[in-house]
Amino acid sequence: MVEERREWRELLEANAAGYARVALDNIDREFPYAVPHTMREPGDFPHRPRAQHPVFYGSYDWHSCVEMYWLLVRLLATAGRGVPVGALPEAEIRSLLDSHLSADGLAAEAAFMVDRVGGRRERPYGWGWALRLAHELASWDDPDARRWSERFTPLAETLTGNFLRWLPNATYPVRYGMHSNSAFAVSLSLPYARARAAGGDPDLLNALVAATHRWFGDDRDYPGAWEPSGSDFLSPALTEAELMAQFVPAEDFPTWLERFLPGLADARPAALFTPAIVSDGSDGQIAHLHGLNASRAWCWRRIAESLPGDDPRVGVALTAMRRHADAALPHVAGSDYMVEHWLAAYAVLLLT
Image (tube, rainbow, N blue to C red; front, side, top):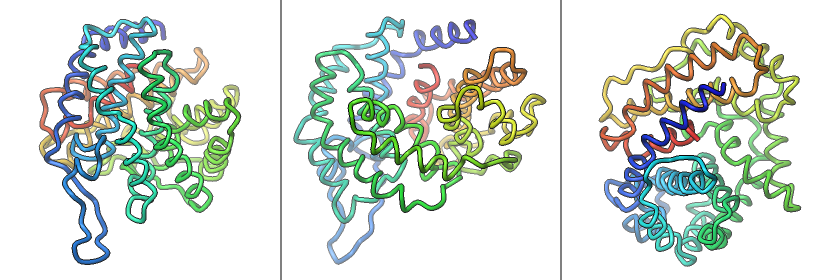
């Protein structure tokens, strides 16, 4: 495992500056922009993206823009913790974050997420990424980050309230490989919820724990051979395993995993070990499959690191991780915009 971690550090150092440039360009690119909207009356249609979303108006859609902010903060914070990440344009990144993560702008984003139109918007994927960004800011010991984190508080509080209203009513999880996937959103939100609980407010963590055990605790014999679907950027099987690796006690996780995905030691089902083929990166739905390869690599890394070192599934998981990373990472930069406006976040998620 030490060798693999060194390999990821080297990849990060070689590519971090390029990933940061992709994010910087995406955040300020207002068009094209996808606007999901339910019209309730004549004239009920959103303004141009920047008028409706003063912070998250770029990168094609709201959640992808949040991902790009997270990517920049994550890279700066990782460098601040002494991990080599290449020659980042730090001054440019800090300037953009300081001007864009404004108190007024973030207050407007928070207000949108509780009004009659936005209260269910971005549920749960965008909510999860935004709380991941909130956690990254709050956990980074940096004067700028403390200021940005304070500005971010109204949006984080709003999304916490949205989660607390929604989770008790979510009788069933969503188990497919796109934005509504329940397991991935919980995993993204978990670090923020744990830090919030450590600070004396356990409500969000308790709600996430209760939902996870209700949805996934008794799962077994998952049909991983049925994957992928044609527009997946997440693996329903592996995102659930990644999440449960964080919830199930370490001594019990190998048994839970064996019940859930029997046959992993023999690289079965083969579908989970085979990178997806992307036939057209300019097609936004087909392009999602690049993300499937990247997010699978991240899941395989979590699974490998959550098993005992002598577990035969560790080597199998690491091999699958490398194969999927090799398939995804060359497409992070220099691809069609349908890939470039989001894939870099999954590369950083994997490499850090």
